[in-house]
Length: 62
Figure 1 (cartoon, one colour):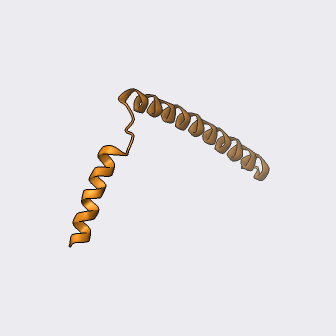
Figure 2 (cartoon, one colour):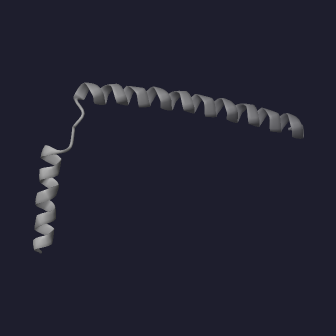
Figure 3 (tube, one colour):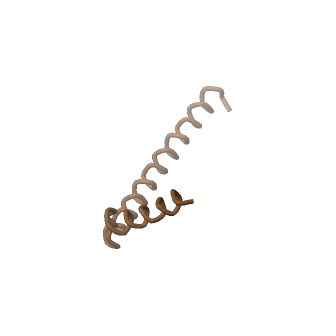
């Protein structure tokens, strides 16, 4: 039980003193960047899928 209590105490100390937390502005900028990158990748995958579908349809004459 003492090991568990020691682990929890050390974890709390580490979270308070050693972890560098991002600011709200940094989080917002990162979130916007991830959203834009996700949309771009989704559009690219959609275009590749459409092209592949048309190529397979043309190949098989469907």
